[in-house]
Image (cartoon, rainbow, N blue to C red):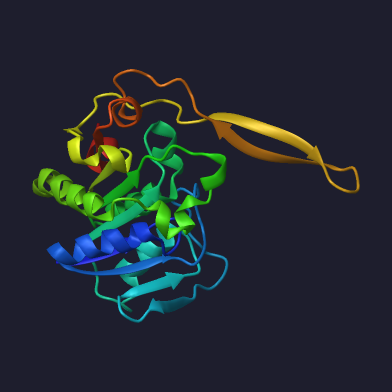
Length: 250
């Protein structure tokens, strides 16, 4: 089985862990954006050329000057690498629970594109309590804690979802904090948190006294029984299954 890996954060420790796991169950390679591309959803690049570079001589890892969705489409159609039977996206730094990430996350956007083009896929993310000192935490290797526990958990999850992998299907897997992985249960929540963040827009002025704006967000109230509740409060592994045929033929 040929497995392609991508994400929306570039070449991170999360990609390395996912690549190690994928090579246990098949022949894997990674094509990731050449820079951080969070929250770009399933956007694709049509107005400029894409450039690919090999970045790790010891592993089959490439960067592409595009979005996660570009990376997914590239692995399927470019014929530069083996056409994948399966696509993994992640591991994303921070969870992708909730309805909003389902339509805006770059990590999940790659899975939307892969599934639309007939390749089953899985988006993996891991919950992180954000602090001011680690907002760029995905760039620092030491912040990716307990890699062996993470890979062990990936094996558990794969055994659960592998029988249901088929064309037109992808899974969104949200792992809890690494400290909870060993005792986490695997659950399939019936409800999805509506809002993952509450938007915050900050107005400032530049040196010429012209206004500019920063858009960000703060944590919402966690809705009991949702995917976010399972991950953030109960410390469980929350899995959401997306079936495209249910969307096209409700």
